[in-house]
Image (cartoon, rainbow, N blue to C red; front, side, top):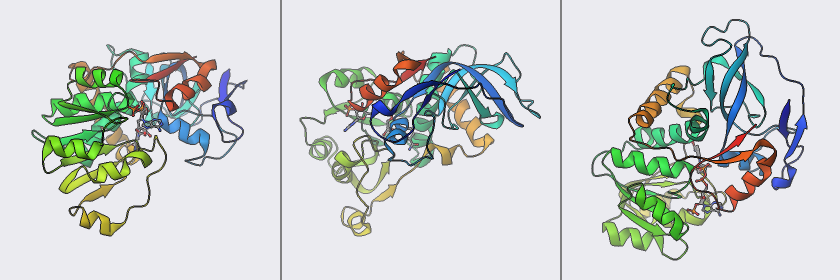
Length: 322
Ligand code: NDP
């Protein structure tokens, strides 16, 4: 079968498509024939080495398709069932992938594989950020960075259904239109506006919570956008890693809270994964959160998908089709 491999860390050019033997599921594992593979920004961190992984390695944590074989002891799914996953193991950029049965996400009948691959990892992230990391409620003022991106589009819509006032931050006018269409109350175009100043003009005292996935480039602006006792949720590094947090600065800027969460801790048990997935599918099925048709690339074009994602050329989600 065809599978993506990287032998070393580096730019998108290190991505190679190779032929490998189809793996066999071991005890408690499931072999999935994938029809759609989620591309996530974290895949670029694995490729560059920002998040170190053992090499050589595959790439990708998320996919959807059909169960082709199950290992000993698996009763949750059987060959022929639809199945998805979004917590690895790394290596989803492939025609088939072996995952642990207890990390399988059941996909509702009315959600296609491509929408599942576009929304599981990103939507579950939005869910824990809004419901667990900082429980957003009616009247909460939140700043959402990269609001027209994969996670961002879901965050904006979900925050609105919870009654929040959403201040979206985006990198272009085209993305501003998307953020507005999704229901954002205010949109800031980061490439020509002082983000913190604009947030203060809108809010007076500052925002209750900032969801920052951009990292290095927006760190100071996020700190300066919060009201006293506000929460800085640093959940990504699309522009590079954030600088170290100095406790005294949190105090000086308003007794702020700072957290650096990751989906894997919020879905670390099968129960937490199920609860998170149930909430996501409910939001998708009721239409509270609409998942835009993802941008599709052939598996062989995974390097181009990375180039476009890293160059800020994509909006919404990106998937690969084997
Ligand atoms: P996105 O579709 O959001 O793409 C990244 C976006 O970041 C770009 O479109 C761009 O939007 C913005 N950006 C700003 N500066 C840069 C830069 N210098 N280089 C590249 N992009 C930049 O990706 P995903 O939806 O896959 O992921 C969004 C973020 O969420 C990532 O940082 C990812 O790591 C993080 N994440 C974290 C999780 C967690 O649990 N901690 C789980 C899932 C995702 P614009 O042009 O509008 O600024």
